[in-house]
Image 1 (cartoon, rainbow, N blue to C red):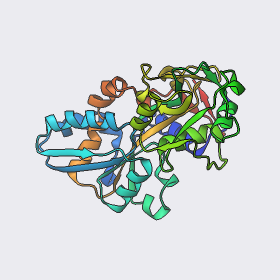
Image 2 (image 1 turned 30 degrees about the vertical axis):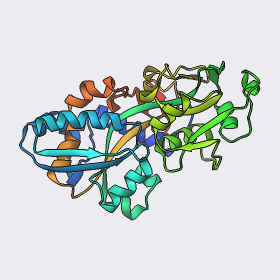
Image 3 (image 1 turned 90 degrees about the vertical axis):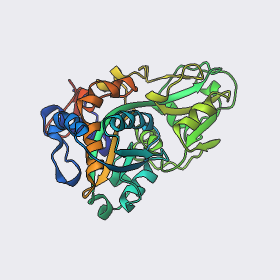
Image 4 (image 1 turned 180 degrees about the vertical axis):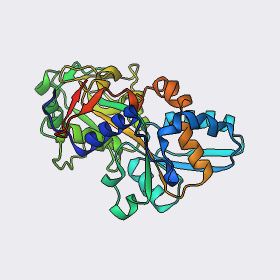
Length: 312
């Protein structure tokens, strides 16, 4: 059994996965119980619904949401689903303000919003994704410890030779404040320690990191697994563990996040139907993994009475 205490983000994410496994389910928008969503999701898609569903938030799983939306709209031609990936903070702020129907986030809403805003929202955990450091093609380092990552992303380690690489300045490409990917990465690397290091650039979206990493030498950044692209950069090990989904599910790779889709408690029928579809077998059974994510129910974890987490 692991004896490491987890952060609130990890604890709740793992608890959410366990809830899915034992059938406790999630509470759907408007107070419906999502324990039956696997069966209801396909039925919802077959029913005649109409309306417009808008979303904003995490760019890390925007591609998954977009692909699922296309399938949902094929089955429901009277529903329009559209949105953007402007970061978890913006998505949560927008859904709390009612300017979008769904706020997508890599982090729990209570980490970004006030308590009175969170109480009016309903969380749907739709997937889990690993996140890890990536380096430019010319960088010879292929493994970093958490302590080394902490040094690099705090500005204390500035040359690749300090971590076993060539004598070259480390170019740090960070995400902007408000990014759920950044919050997840920093929580894993720094714990509760406050970090204000910006690096050489702060980028808006995961796609921006992909592009910049592909054209910059001696750089380091971090991305979710679904945005890894070995034609542009290299994903590297952390503490000797490869960044693979299998290593996330057994908790040997420590940097990961639960992907959330929040809606208001009084969401309309089109929004409810789409979120039920996201939790249905049509999405969870195949599409999630095809897009590089992990079904929440696949997390191989249990929680003991002390509140600590161990792999099965």
